[in-house]
Length: 457
Image (cartoon, rainbow, N blue to C red; front, side, top):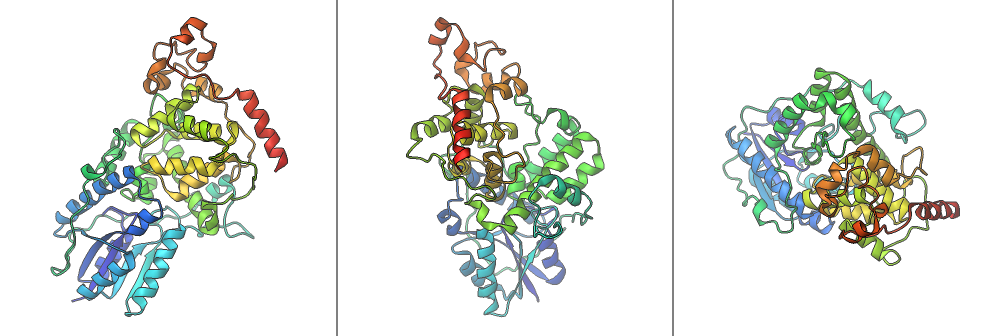
């Protein structure tokens, strides 16, 4: 009887899962395996919010497999050693997994291929499991990747996509392969109190509800900070609890400007994946425009601390940073605002902000987190690298009634929405009654420093 192993990584679902379906077609029995790899912790990717969300995903995946006569095998240890042990126990002839683009994923795949090859076991890395279009599948003339989003989007939009795969009806798992206990969300300390439930079931329910109730208005409302009209699907996409390919197909079937705007956001994910696949060092180094005069932890310690705590004196920035700490998530427009404030108004190294996001974001991943930070900081793919987002102007535009600020900055709940974005302009007696800090820096001074520093680079 033939056996194959499917190594789950960032693809924690049964619907539209090419590695699993390929294994089921070619083998009589399949071992669905997830490895709690200490290398993830050592690399700094194992933040509490993501660990808790992962626990939900694994429980949901195991439950879905059990409804199909299968089960999830979870083991702990170095990934290559564990996979080789499982392969030896069940006599598997092939291991399937989803291809990745990060340096960690590449290194894992190389070590697996080498370690399994010694035993004559083949490794099959499948593309378009975590992305819609495979990184490197769409390239411009004379280059190995697109460095600007809009031309990439035009080419990407013309690609023929594979049809989504249904979830398997039955998954037969060899009796002799045992796993350890699944991690428990309740045992993870330090999680955000507003963290959502993880897992494919929760993700599919969220998408179904949002596609019916919110997708049609997405184009007009996706920047509305208080309206919270975004899909909030990013954590499920990060863990692969949802298939980006399936979401594109379903959105296109629904149609309309809102669906088109949503598909465009999914394309941004693919864009970043193809950038990092071609330029792996961009996860830690400036991608395009190098800047050498950033302020670091030592020079800007007080400013960085105030930014992290949501005490900058700029209400929309502080609201966003407090939302991040409470929910492990932040509205996309707010992410742009706080990143611009840190890198361009305070002129702090983008890597410091990216690290803080990775410490808290449930959807935090190297690809999108690092490259979005670079885009805002002016070192990445933005064609207008010197743009600076003014938090007062942005607050008035995307939170005109102050509802978002009132929600997350309770010190300002009694301030009229039209004035809440500039509390320093309130009458002195009213300002004195607020437990809220003065602005860290005058915006004009921050802009002058930014322009001067960029002039030296």
